[in-house]
Length: 447
Image (tube, rainbow, N blue to C red):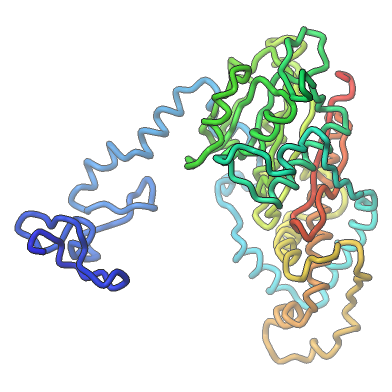
């Protein structure tokens, strides 16, 4: 006990088991610290540093070393996929937070608020009338659906259902082909220059990489690139690297800064892009990242191209006007930058209600100012806040889904403008996930 730290751990009903510092009663974790001694690191505020050591720390901060190492990579190009604000360039780096969006909505008058809603209803009715259900569980994914996978692979039914349907939709759309070998198992094959097979897959926002794990297990993919800016434990990488026929490369980089055409091992190969739940602007960054200019095609050869993609979108409330891929299209529909911010904020309402049924189809949703005339006499200075608070959960959810679909349809139209055949579908029931929109596309000339 004399050699233990004298900090009492209440939850464990004992003193801390660590060894105290010399000439101190406490260990490094429990040595009393005054607020003026410790300050957030100016490079990465997630950790603190003694003020007296600040000068030395900023030179050896791990974040600095990681950034320096990344900047030497040929595929690193700061902000290459970020997009442009199109106005007030000095404010390009400032993101509009959800709080800022909410305050802007609440600052509207009640007539202005309902005018925005009427515009959302009108635009949605014009462009979002062809979003079909497409729940696909392909035969190729039977091993995963039955749970007959390596015990070291995390198995959660809802995630497996989503992953399988993503791959099933890709297969039905003609982007994926199942290669069946002996015993009904998938095997990789040698692909000639003119083969319709897909030798490479790039997973954006890969996380631990289990979408790619299913793809490799079920479709015989032989070359994989995992793009993820964060570090994760319990990754699928170890299992993937045990496949002799598969080559795996993990790119630890923000999608915003990735020049995919500069990844040497991908040059000369057709590829498909996938991403499950690419939050907010990450979808727009990915679409821009996959855009291949004519110049790059000439440099890499005729096979250096995107053959197809499948992106499950989510977290639309995080979307930013700067990053959004098709500002021109929304502007043509009469949606301004400020209204885009309101639309993105409304999307968070899509998860307010019970999702045992598909709210985006079943609710006869119309709101008009005359239905809440009494709200206009409300003495509360922020009448819109009161209106929003008094809306039914299903009404809020319906509005949220409308806004999500408008944002995703703009992305779909951008892909069409760039020569791709594309669809926006509901790939799982809302009871599995209310974030159930899948954007799939392919280059028609290469199939």
